[in-house]
Length: 168
Image 1 (cartoon, rainbow, N blue to C red):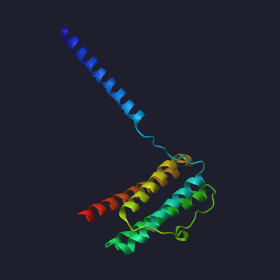
Image 2: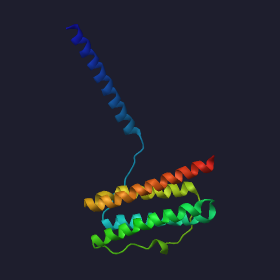
Image 3: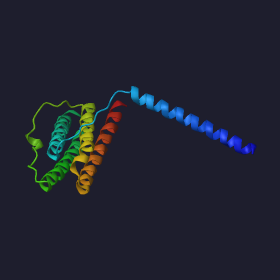
């Protein structure tokens, strides 16, 4: 009987600690800054935004190609990956009866040849992929775009490694 009381006491203590932890987590969440996600209203809007962000990544990669040693090896591979992703998005557009997206080569603008800027551009692209997935409503489309999103994440990891290597 004494053993049962000790176990009950232990469980009560554990439950009390868990409740305090949960309450603390709730308080921390309530006081943290709000994070907002983009809710796309249409498939076209989502795909157009991804196209725009991918083009920005391409411009940054182009700027990086001539400005950094070693970029000549990575940049063509990155651009080839972004081109494959664009082909996937064009397939998705056709499957939904949407017009073609904007050709990234037609997008011109100034881009700084810096790794932090490219990292942020890749983050923005990856987030746009993630936020857009619910709008498509078809598992095969979501799967194809999620695969591209994961590849963008891998590209971003390579940029992180590159930045670390340059810092050493």
